[in-house]
Structures are given as C-alpha cells and as structure tokens.
Image (cartoon, rainbow, N blue to C red):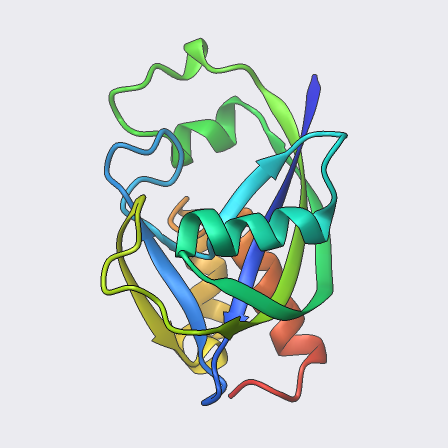
Length: 164
C-alpha cells in the first residue's frame, strides 16, 4: 500500500479564530465538507514549504509564524473510502493508501480575497467551541470531517491554550 503525505494549514487570525474552508462538491474526497486548507506533497518538498504553498496558491496570501503542531497516520482502506468519497465514485476504482498527515499552524499576512479559488466558501471559527470533542468525533466517524482537521482539533483540546 502506498504512502501519501499531506500538510493541513491551520491559520489563526488576531481574534484567535481558525480558518475553515468548504470543499467543492466535485472533490473526490470529502466533497462539501468543512476542513482546513491542505495539500499533498512529495519527497522533494518540505512540510513548511508546502504550508507556504497552501497560503500562496490556495489562499492567495503569505503566511507567517509557522509551527508544526501534530501528525498522524491514517489508513485509507475501503471502509474509510466508502465514507469520504463522492457517491458517484466506485470505491473499487480508488487505490487504498496510507496518509501521513502533518498539521501546521500559522498566521495570515494580509487579507484573504472574498472568494478563495478551489473552495466553495470559508469561515473564521473558534475551533474549540465550534467543534467540541464529541461532535468532532461524530463528524469524523461519519466521514464529514477530514483526518488533518481531526488532528488539529485534538491538538487544540489537549495542548493549546491560545484558541477558544
């Protein structure tokens, strides 16, 4: 089974709110779900370089104060893929894989455009109160919350005094 690495970028604004983006309906995985901006990367790329690329390419801005906050490994087997794929994609047509996820927190440098390319919408939310642990677990198990987003919320609940 192949290994895919990805970075999710948890941008925090001056009010302590985290940026969540709504994925497009045409996305293969997690269509129409709220998540953190993310990007997979290859062996020639770095975690922080990928986080900066998310800022520039997906959000149209620069990001600063990057800090690695959590990581995890998830198996994207048939059972999990059934929950997170668009309904029109046959599960058998997708290769199973392991996803090694890195969550990086950063600060926004500048303003976001009104519409982010590649996303339906975005919203600044108090992550801890918007996704309490029981609700985050329910959403994750139902395939409505991504792996990296789950890892960020777990880190917030356990380790971060900065976000309310």
